[in-house]
Image 1 (spheres, rainbow, N blue to C red):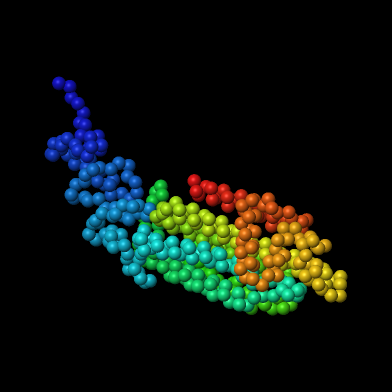
Image 2: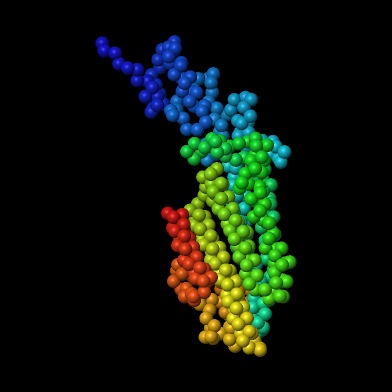
Amino acid sequence: MPSYPNLHFPFSRWFGKSVQPNKGSHSYGENRATECYACTQVGVPVFHSTSCDNANQPEWEASAGSSLIPIKHKPGSSVGAMARNGSGSGPFGRVLDPRRKRVQRWNRVFLLARGVALAIDPLFVYTLSIGRGGSPDMHMDSVLVAIVTALRTCVDAVHICHMWRQFWLAYVSRESLVIGSGKLVWDARAIASRYVRSSDGFWFDAFVILPIPQVLFWLVIPKLVQDEQVKLIMIILLLIFLFNFLPRVYHSISLMRRMEEITGYIFGTIWWGFGINIIAYLIASHVVGGCWYVLAIQRVSTCVRKQCHLQSSCHLPLSCLDVNGPFSYGIYEWALPVVSSQSVAVKILYPIFWGLISLSTFGNILEPTSNWLEVVFSISIVVWGLMLFTLLVGHIQ
């Protein structure tokens, strides 16, 4: 009779059943031990057995991005105990599992708070106005400054709470990443040390909530408004945008990506993702509208300065706020009734509308003059519109 090879292993792989070989076979015991050793390794094993011997039970460490419930661990395994309990002890409290529902809900609330913070910052520029009651002087609304400062302080307080939680929130070890999954670090001291030493950790979080706009709009800009230093005010606002607002945007994006590394998602539904992209588009329109508003004030101020230099008296409503006047405003024509308006709603909503329509049409409505700053701003709007539209379509798909 011809001899046939033993086929018990392939059937055990596919059907969960196998032909039992001789229990006294030494080679079979070695194969089972090897398979069980593969089962106990962190990451995706090369092969997986359907059974393991009782002497060497498999031990799986908690991996980020996995929806599996950890099985029981060996006695004395500290990592297993932490993963099983969802927390460990540390100097800042119990270490939290970032995959828990409560932590994920907090992440959603915090990301929405960061979106609100990004929408609050451009409101500072609407505290400035020019041409109220026919006066050529620049004014600052102190009541609106107080309201915006209070709103900014509230959202920064939420950020401080998030910073405190980072000292006792388990994180994914980059050394253990295997095709999108990795081990969670549960050691409390390692968590705190990593958060303090990381380039995008504690110090970056502290930097983005520095009250730079509040200090400038309460202590510096009021004096410059009294001295009519419009050019210096524009430079300060530009520096705030470059070194305070843009880092806050980058911080929000990097924070969202770090949260997605752990669970693979943040909000979980396609409608939430669509809503987040629409909110980002509206915030971008809000920022563009704020820049347009400030540059319009600068253009009106330039007109006033030229008129007052040529004439002994200044008649702001008769010339500098007239669209058909001798001064060319280019893309700022629509802003003339806005910069002199006493309605806060008009000063906020109309620039948002202008920014939204400019980004949506990729700058087709823009007819800039030969002023270099106006041309650069128009080019930036076209580039931002194309970039945001591409990102929105890519995320929806």
